[in-house]
Image 1: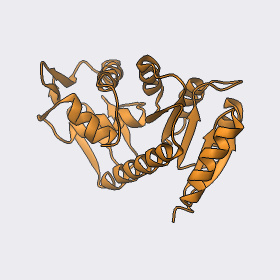
Image 2: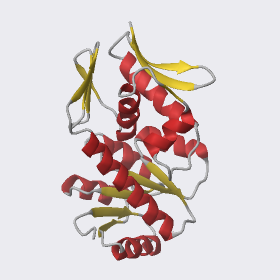
Image 3: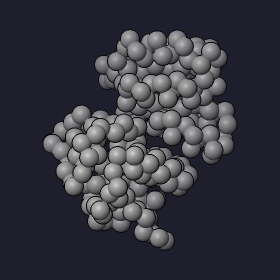
Image 4: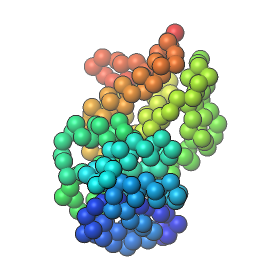
Length: 231
């Protein structure tokens, strides 16, 4: 069913790799493995994966560093595996460009569910955005290539930053609560901290401010966020 979809599973524990691999293969996914961060980066650079399952605590190069490096050349969806339930780690992970999180100890079925949900969202986003581009004063968002230009200069966004920015921009003037944004941008299956939204908004604002004095994302106190162009 999913035989054309290739997933890389990165974990230094062979037992965990085998378990995740077995469950994903049962669903028909093609699976590659890597035991450390260096091996993972080498494989990701050589192979066009549809998704990466990445352990946070890795030898040689840790998961955060791998994630940051991957985001410099690819928007492949990344699910982080972490033994820590600490929200701070999650927020840092999202800043580095992770798309979702699974906390150890986990059920392999949960990983499969997250993988399917993330692939569905990524595919959906790309299909929806095949049309053309969104244009506002000082801002262009190209939907097929997922590139963003502020005052004529391209800014580099993580996949989730792009999805969030696109969601707000395509609903110009509408105010969305953080709960609604989590639901729409991260998906119904994402059980995350509302601060995830704030972190992404903060990153977006900083990247825009580096190129423009215009404000695009506005806080509506007590409610949430909206997109509006203000000089």
